Length: 619
Ligand code: ADP
Image (tube, rainbow, N blue to C red; front, side, top):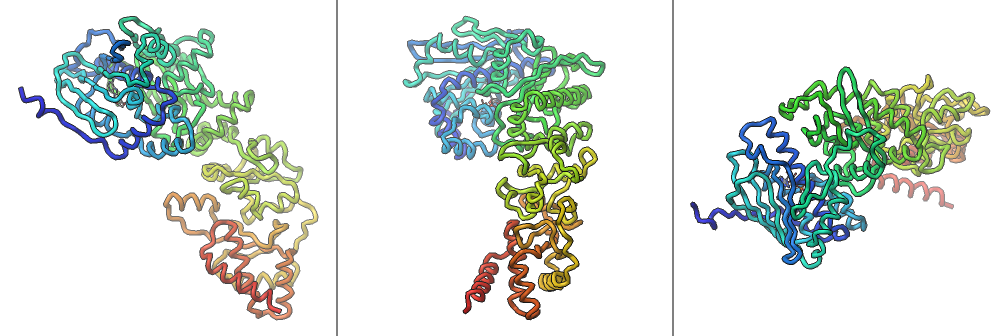
């Protein structure tokens, strides 16, 4: 045997991990009992893994043992241990799994939450750092583990949390993991047997495995999703949700399915969470569905069961149509999953339709929370596209800030002469409300949908028609502006025509065209999209994502009734080559660009403004 000292290896946490640990230890104090839920959840995962792997892989030890979690707690010594006979960890896994931060952005996010005074405990389960919550109740932790494979080596990992940790080989005949520590003074309340039991009943009642506290079994083990809807209480459903997701809040809603089909039979219990994950748009990183076959979990995060735009749904699916003894990879590529996926997608969409029609408040809450991901389904799920379009919601010029409407409701409010559905894109409600292109529509009380979620521009322009009515952006050059009576055609006015000629000559190829506007009321000029042009908001988004988009040229529309334009026309009659004319035209064009957030040079703009002011104030 080698000298033990030689075999102890010490590792230092990476800087990011250290800072994260510090944050966890010092800001989660409102819920110190989190530690127990996290440890039980890890033990339970390890047991699920071994249950499945011993069916699919050779060379596993302790196959005959009952799968269970054993907790020992001693009030006098204030010590605690939790032991599972699950999959255990190899040295590599130990170092990789509990020495690093799993998801990028975690530290920044938690730090921000803390600065904003929010409770990070609500989110802790999302980050793969749950294990470290033990450092809220203790100063030093020992993990003894042995992977279930017969060749594996027992290992001991010891850490004081902040700083470093050590790993050394030990003799450990049985598979699984045992975690031991002594409570710190502030946390000694947890050393009581009854306190531990109470906490388990609160958070971990649905563990798949028996949990013993000082040799007494404390939980009930049952597969809630196999029961029918009327056999389960709302409280049970909520507790179950919290158990599988490590969430603290009740879900927004749940759907229970029991499908006996020719193609696939399954039972499912799925949920819409109340809150979105902090990185909602990175759908690939979210945990989704746990896949069981005959009560045995075979994949803990089965992304193949739902389309990407529904990946925020959590829950359990249990089917008897998958063989147990095949690898995870084979399970994930099985055609049965495809069948369940399309079946579940249909059911979930029906569920959302029910919410939208009967529980509107709840649906809007859902839409505001998960809309940015959900609405992308319009572009990706062609089989359900029409139904998804019905489920879209928007702010609108006819509604108060924060209120949402559907295409259908919009259709019901359309004016008699109105043939098209209108929308306008922008960063914020304030931004769209100030857009000069809205003036005509305001004046004639024609409703315009406001697309202020950045995702909208990827979704709505692809909807060319709704209920046979064209869906149009109002900043397109060729929208129908014939609805309001008395909007006389001004293009015959020859003075206006020659002034427009001067605009064209001045701006040359900076614009696609210059036209007399029929949409402006209060503003002098505005930029609209030409026939070939791309939506401005879309162009901006693509640039933000680092895509190389050629800036498409706009059409400048001029309001010939505006006092400034009328003054320019007068000056033009007196002296067509007055230098001030071109200066003002350039300034007007750049003002429109400025309004759109597209001004190239602010200093040129300001310099020219000074020159014009100098001219105007000259006596
Ligand atoms: P999470 O469980 O969210 O991934 P944790 O910090 O709680 O984050 O755990 C990190 C990883 O350490 C787990 O994903 C698992 O791979 C491993 N681990 C933790 N506890 C155990 C255990 N009792 N048995 C086996 N592996 C474990």
